[in-house]
Image (tube, rainbow, N blue to C red):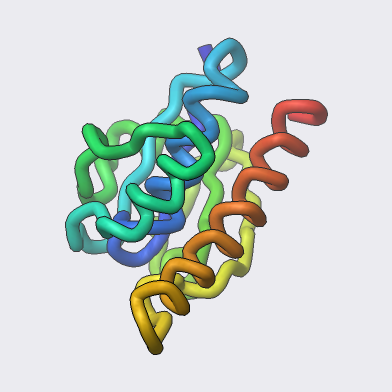
Amino acid sequence: MNKIYFLCTGNSCRSQMAEGYARIFLKDKYEIQSAGLEAHGVNPLAIKAMAEDNVDISRQHSKTINPHYFQAADLIVTLCGDAKDHCPVTAPQTRSIHWPLPDPAQATGTPEQQLLIFRQVRDEIKQRILALASNP
């Protein structure tokens, strides 16, 4: 089965949300994992925003890039510029795409204002995962 790897800086928000949606919409096409350049823990607001769309990522955990999975991946999806710029070099057969999404963990304001940013990023990720599902 093909492997997809979602990467961002801390594996706390964007890549976790992408993994959550991919496990629903891409499960028949890909083995799915996510990771970060660092492991910051799964952000509680990411868990909350995904739960609002009936996707449970509360059991996922934050992890750093596994070099073996990275080299075996058929598709690498970076979700931030930092991951794109600092990822290891991909194997020649590996396809890479970049989704330049804002980091919701950097949102400021009230908790509700911060959650709004998480929802916006969540919705963008969902649309991109659905596009991948319809045109892998």
